[in-house]
Amino acid sequence: MEEPESPVEALFEKAELYVKTTVELYKLKTIHQSVEVVSSLAVSLVLWFGIVFTFMILSISLALWLGECLGKTLYGFFATGCLYSFLLIILYLLRDFLIKKPVSNVLIRMLLPKKSE
Image (cartoon, rainbow, N blue to C red):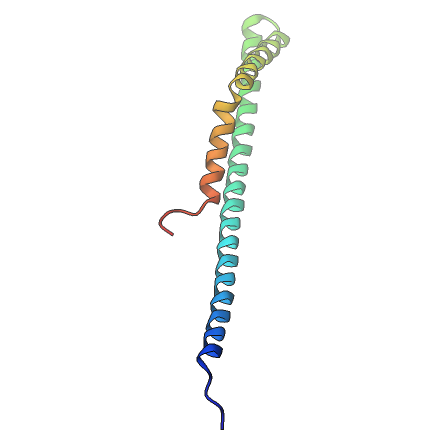
């Protein structure tokens, strides 16, 4: 015959089961968050690649059109390069407001658990 379990032994078994379940739950939540972040980054990467490719084609078209208007193709590429240099200087000066804060906010929203969970 088996001896009946003492209440302390039963409590330790339940505590051990609780700890194992809690650890497994945190593992699954971590995996879920990691998959969400990686998949979101993958989608963003593909979209940015398409945007950059489109922007590059439009830039070449603009440079060729400006070159035709200015009389030499070289002038069109020079004007387009100057325009982009000016835009990059503005972007550099406003980098915290236009890039750093929005990217930080998106990452924080992705990594922190939602209130409904």
